[in-house]
Image (tube, rainbow, N blue to C red; front, side):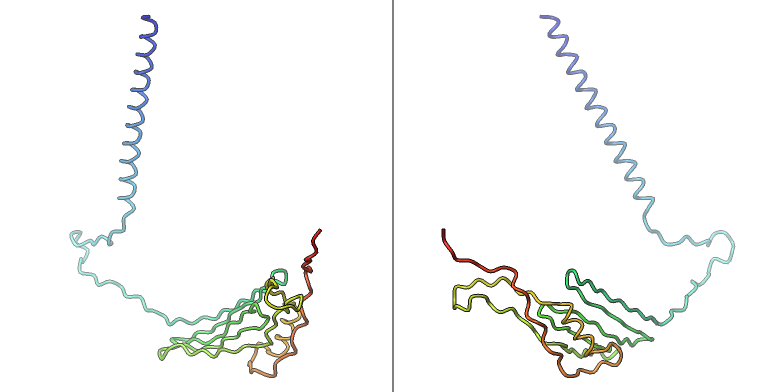
Length: 191
């Protein structure tokens, strides 16, 4: 009987020591974290007013240069029918550029813009012809629509030929893209 009591007392001592160590480690971690974060605070620069080195120095004002830049990017991935891009040139407070995106209906949206002190002035154009899949079956009402699928590569090529990237002017619309292939035919046959 006394062996069992001695064993349970040892377990309680073990748990007490374990909890004591856990609390001490937690407090130590909290104190060190607190001192670390206070050391990381942003403080204004120290002045040398008391060091006799002419403490009334004026801060140096660095000249700000106007924003002048130019960038271009194009993303094309035929595997997932992605085609978009953007280019922009900025001089002082005026920017001009354009961006384009291939829309799900096969057209390309082209936005040319100018931006400056008097605002943002876009010109939005659509190149190409929207193509939508025909619903299979020809019946009315009960057909299920399986989204649309278009041949992005051939439509993209026709859009690029009709809208060169230089001085873009909307021209005649290119011929519509060929009809998408039928992925599968729905069968209503019962067994």
